[in-house]
Length: 136
Image 1 (cartoon, rainbow, N blue to C red):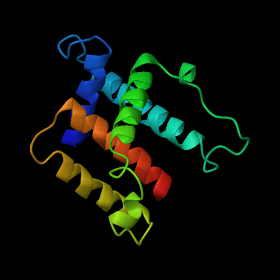
Image 2 (image 1 turned 90 degrees about the horizontal axis):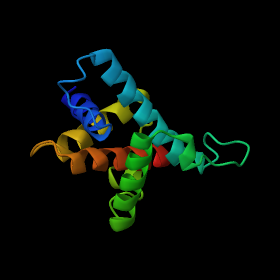
Image 3 (image 1 turned 135 degrees about the vertical axis):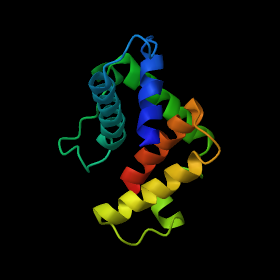
């Protein structure tokens, strides 16, 4: 749950608001969910997994926060391609049930954040999420 809170704080900071100005937890959660959905939809739109008609989503389709995350996570993937390629194989994922995928995701999140939460680590988790969604 601390990861969701950290990601929410990241979104609040990117949107130019301070946490003191945004006391509405539901709004923060809604924004977090939107950014997560936008990021994964963008990552998956280039595949036939969710894109049956061959069109891809454009950055103009998203809000500024989502665009920033998409671009930043994309840069991270370009800078470290070996980290974000073939993640299922490298993590030895053999079961593709919701529970198994959730456990692997939680283990990776715990590893990423074991020494603390930073914005770079949050973006890294998003980049991992995109790669994980594509592989698994």
